[in-house]
Length: 286
Image (tube, rainbow, N blue to C red; front, side, top):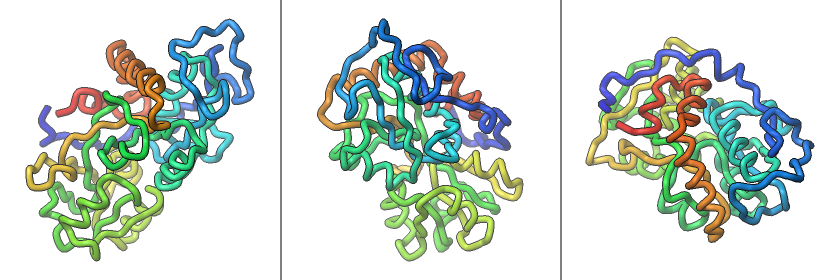
């Protein structure tokens, strides 16, 4: 699929109205303290830090995942998909909303079983975390700006903001110059600086960009065309759920879930309910 005309004008109201409670085997919408049905038969079995609980360090960034507090409500793509994954494996899920860098550290330190928020797969992350063989969605970089920048070359000499810890930080610094790259701990602060004119553009996943540009009509998010000179910045990458390393049955359970929700239409439904109407791009790529 060509990206030339792929530009999100606005997100639907579904993102902020989808209110998700923590899921147990008895069904979605139950409170966090709900007991798992004793008759529940898990689709897969794998060890977790706390028996019967899936602890998730969730990168708090809509529309991928969003919560106002640790007690919820929990919204977004991964709030629903991870809840469904926990449900079918007879686990209650504990979401711990935090920034991306904090979530990576939480998982690395063994305080969580999984990281949520649709995280890009990378070789570096694979050295530390378990990564699925497949993917839940594809992603590529979007440039959010007032001027409509749509290429790496457009950003040369500009002040550019990125989310700290993201896959794009190192290649952006190499391509644009480290002195022109500003790192942010969260997407809200990054977009505030863009609207205030402290940076000229933001380089981040298209899901983040389309959400934030939909809240301010002065800014748009453009998807960069693939450029062989900048393979990481412009290539199609895979989103997954980083998880405890060297637990093959955990990885297999995630991969099996990914395949089924893409095949049966669940993934497309969840994307569309969260305002990502072009679900085909995220599921099948260009």
